[in-house]
Length: 500
Image 1: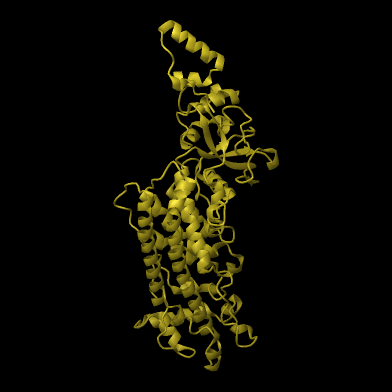
Image 2: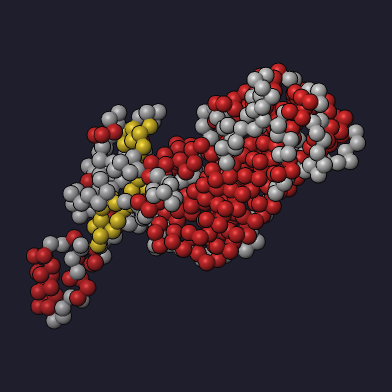
């Protein structure tokens, strides 16, 4: 957090950096009147004009990216008291200095977060998605847009900032405006390799940094930004006079980095058989869910847990830990399996298997209209739609297991019936990259009594390789002997491979 400034001038509450003092000084109205006078002859930036009119009237006073030292030069109230200035002048300039620091910290956070992300890209491909390593540039653009849009939302769920909710909401909307305007859709949509991704992220993040610079300059000059807000909207209610709840550059950096990593992993995991299962229960301990990814939702009445279906051979496999989950959860990345599950569950409850970009923006807008509840900045990777793994609602069926548990037989446990009366099964199967996956049909025929009544979205195939995989040793030997006796030929060697 930022350091608390200006706690001087004795114990007089009128001069302390608090929302109460800001309100008592009628700061919003006084500042608005001053702003209207400035608008009649705006020869210098509004903040510069204001600073020169009160206190010690410093020379060279400017606010913006890279100008923190100058903008923060009037952070003590003594000069105002000595000059017989009203308290509102000091409290408004203190708020402006703190707002300037916030802009600079967001800029620094994006800069360092981007560098940290780029340095980890090559490791990420090996750890989290060993089978897939191409990225859609439009998706990458969207991730950075959302990161920039979310950073200013930090104040929407902080109780200490509730009295200044209008200012916090305005600042959050300003971030949305910047995110929606600073980047065009990529002209070249060719999939990016990991090497190309590093360059692309660097270029786009630079545009995000430039957008923050423009936003800050526009604000401190006194002009309207893309959302028709001025600096008056941002400091209203004392939103920046008390900075104890405002994040530091390091916090912004960590958020930006984790958001980018989470978005990358989600994009790639959605190309594999990684999914989330929901089981109705009021006793989470009664399920087989692995603790690493289990999230209990009293509202939904059950537990969610996330798995990778690992194929151990032809027509065989088991529920396992998603690629690199342990690494993802370590201090380098700080993304928990519970957050992954929670985020996917919320996206599913909102839009089933079709969580779109419009849904994501709508969720951000809802966060701004419902202060003091939650926010994507506070939830981090657990925010709705950061992860969008498909969810199979198995009802009260007990089809969850510990990671790597093979006790259920050659197929392991499978998501055989999704949604009420299994009506979501085909949609889930397609979303989970299981359409055409013959292991699912054969496993569910054994596992689920209602198998015949379920639409999986594809049909049964009876190839020789599938039959061979399911036969016992005796039947395989008999088939070989019969083939030799009848046709004078032996069965190809590959058919003798027994499923692991």
